[in-house]
Length: 366
Ligand SMILES: CC(C)(COP(=O)(O)OP(=O)(O)OC[C@H]1O[C@@H](n2cnc3c(N)ncnc32)[C@H](O)[C@@H]1OP(=O)(O)O)[C@@H](O)C(=O)NCCC(=O)NCCSC(=O)C[C@H](O)C(=O)O
Ligand SMILES: [Mg+2]
Image (tube, rainbow, N blue to C red; front, side, top):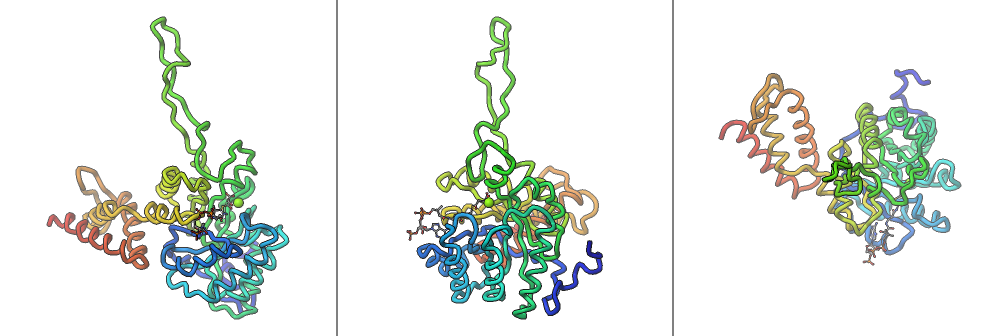
């Protein structure tokens, strides 16, 4: 085990110093594309600015015979595109695959200066992150990168889940963790066959009531409530990430046509503490942007509370409700997110500026 004092020492001579804090850059939609798919790849330069993150996917969903084409296609796109405020990420093939070593070596040496984050699938434990950490440092040193490439783990095995806190804290490079519900379901032997989302069979049913004969009518009209298959997983993931100062994300919602179910799944994750999600199809981008940006009415309320609370101590009444240090801190989370999003999203920035003005005015009794 490394000493705590060594944690922020570069793992290779000449590699950039690890970051002490992971920047809170907007990452509401991590948009997946297959760089080996010419039609999709051609759309990527035009998508800059429409999503927070563009992710060149090299792993699952890319056919084995296209792995090299996808890797080289991503290099080409990265070299020829000005990404402006949009981040460039890549999901590499799994550590035990025949492609991982070439993926990481090629991307870091060819486009390491443009690559913000590498997403590592099927992470099992801290040892996987330690391996990637050292390798990245060696490659960064080799090409003289000035800033470290960050690492994002996908939680998609039972072992990874059991080790989630250790994974989140395994390296100062850790940027965040996404849920991989399809692989995780398979590894856990869950009996679902979908990519994320709920299942109508996972439910609770209201108690039976008695009929006129005084017998329980178990076949009668009993309300059923579908339950959230992912609640435990996402809640644990969020805690692990928050504990280590990194960010939690939902993952894929495979039913592209069910935009309503997708929005619900994304919103559950947002409310539980996730900062973003994956988008697999252009249809999902607006949903992610909408869900992972706080409602201007919430932002106005948050400014109202934060302003009314002043130094954050004591208690005040706002709209008939008691507010104190704890609710003020929740409101501060919303205010901070709105401020961060305003920096890269001018349209939202205007709405949030109005909300701020109105919230402060209310607190000041104007
Ligand atoms: C899901 C898709 C295969 C659907 O593609 P397609 O049938 O082509 O859809 P459409 O005809 O509706 O497409 C309309 C146009 O939009 C373009 N398009 C489609 N998807 C994208 C995209 N992601 N980025 C940019 N552009 C896109 C099409 O080319 C059409 O263009 P045009 O003909 O000019 O109008 C496809 O969307 C897709 O492959 N998406 C990505 C899938 C993916 O990345 N999957 C992996 C992540 S999920 C996962 O791995 C599971 C996870 O790990 C776990 O374990 O849970
Ligand atoms: Mg997966």
